[in-house]
Structures are given as C-alpha cells and as structure tokens.
Image (tube, rainbow, N blue to C red):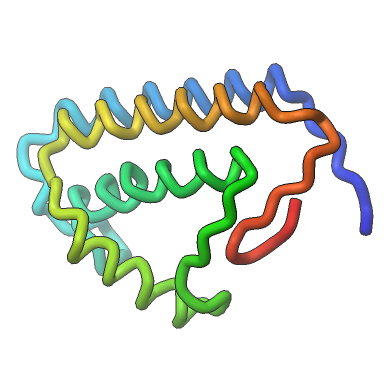
Length: 126
C-alpha cells in the first residue's frame, strides 16, 4: 500500500473555505426545491446529503466504522436515497449551519488523530 503525503494545514484551510462558501450560497437560495442542473437532486436534497453525511465522516475520522450501503455506485445510490428519506431537513439556512457544524467536528476529530492512524470507510481504508 502506498503513502500519500498531505499538507494538513492547507487541506484543513481548503475544507473550511469550501464549507463557508457553500453555507453562504445556501443561506441565499430562496427555494431549495430547485433541481440542480444535470442532477436528479434538488439543491435542498444535495445540501441535506452533505449535512447528514457529515456526521458519518466525523465517526469514521474518529475510528468508528459504520457501513453505508454496498460499496458500488448502485449500492451507494440506494443508501443515499434512503438517507434522504429519513433526513427531511431542506431549509437552506439550517442545512448551512449543520454543514458548518459537522465540518468543524470532522476537522477537530481529524486534528486529534495520530498521524499514522488507519481509518476505515465504506469504500476505502485510509
């Protein structure tokens, strides 16, 4: 298995920047029921996916493995559809807050990890 060197400071900064920019956009969207161009999801569904998936990434970063669908495109699509049925929030401002909260929780957990810690996700071991 190879080793990928990552500049954690730059990566952390980029993740925070993307989360902040996404949250700002979501706060300005008047109707999250609008379909995303070229996608099956609405703005609200895509944001809900990010908000709800963030909690799983926090768990995985903490070393807790929880399966999520089968590790195939089709399996993940089914798991995502099921999750969107269970996670019903679609308000842009509330989703923005949740995305920012889970992003910070993820980054805090990642910062606390020993550099050599191995982590398992449904698709790959890191």
